Amino acid sequence: MTTPRLQLSGITKRYPGVVANSGVSLTVQPGSVHAVLGENGAGKSTLMKIIYGSVKPDEGTVTFNGQPVHIRNPQEARALGISMVFQHFSLFDTLTVAENVWLGLDKSLSLPEVSASITAKAAEYGLDIDPSRPVHTLSVGEMQRVEIIRALLTRPQLLILDEPTSVLTPQAVEKLFVVLRLLAAQGCSILYISHKLHEIRELCDACTVLRGGKVTGVCDPRQESNASLSRLMIGAEPPALKVRELHAGASALDVSGLTLASDDPFGTHLNDIALTVRAGEVVGIAGVSGNGQSELLYCLSGEDTRAPAQCIRMGSHDVSRLSPGRRRALGLHFVPEERLGRGAVPTLSLAHNLLLSRDDALGAGGWIKVGALRKQAAEVIARYNVKANGPDAAAKSLSGGNLQKFIVGREIEAKPTLLIVSQPTWGVDVGAAAQIRGEILALRDAGCAVLVVSEELDELFEISDRLHVIAKGRLSPSLNRADATIERIGEWMSGLWDPQSYDKKETAHAAA
Image (cartoon, rainbow, N blue to C red; front, top):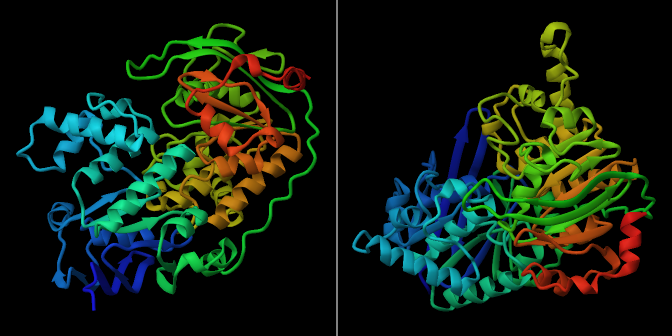
């Protein structure tokens, strides 16, 4: 019989108040693309960190290529032939892309050689990145590209990928899958974590399902449906979204002639952005990370107040130069792409993180009504099924998906008139994604204007009434959802649209 590439037996890891992994066993064969599936907080990330040596198990054994191993740190893991792309990145902000990659490679290579290798790999996989850029200038999506390239350059025997396709166009996803299949055919084993069930069914030949830190099933995903995988993962199928007929009202957000140079030397300049979002509609913006999404969102949220006067309006108000607080007072709430550090203060409790965007628990003189604040946080935790140790849990103690649910819930429960959301379901499981999308549609049906920026095309097709694409700082014409196709949006994500093809009916529709 073939010796397994990786074998885990009885892996248990406990944290104060929670057992992340309980008696987990897992076997990965050479050349297998093996999915690890589970809802947020199921223990997937902890298990991967144990394999990669960044977390030490309390109990259990790890065998690699038939030999028992005690992996004490990621350096030892890489020496064995294990590489990992984390969902939360392990990059040094003050170093360049090339320097970050160099840290994980053989030091016999020179920095120019590493830079050339990065450029070659980036071109091969369609992951455009400049090796000389400092990491702190990169968007979240661009940081993930660095992690993917760094892992591939180590020529691993076991490659762990945590949500690797969220920053790729559909065409680039297909290209990455070709590469992963080639790696598997050459004997490399791949552990693949994704909440995209269709990806798992298309790519993976084995699947281990975790629920509550325990293994609840092992299957061949090629023989399963999305519905059956959902049942294995969360015990039920996610509810179908109820999309009502569009009854859009007055314009809630108008952007016209927004041209702005990025204040980041590696950023993307905005070029003549025009956008309208009306009360009672969801407008989606698709695009590969790093094409101007961050710059546009900074302008819309008020983090960047350099926009020319009259370029950004909320109803009758010119908000181009207003601060985030003053825009919030007009009804704008915002969910940023970066959860920790931007959407939440890592060391503060969930209750106190409510104060970032809500002031209804503040009393006279600015005194905090602690009891009211904790009650509000508990309500968000309960309604959005956030797995946390109560309102006093620090934001940094939550898994990425659970923190995302809390932040989205915090903003939705503030009852905005205009909600701007970046990557609403990035890293959340299929059940939570369905709930968040349902809540967005419920807001829309209640008359809220919603702008969603996402790299999940399936998500945008599911919830948007109209779609735009952003590429190289330019915004495409809008398309009614019924007129949009994956192929067309995928082409536009490369900047390939003809401004002359803008349907006059759509112009009238957007201006109505």
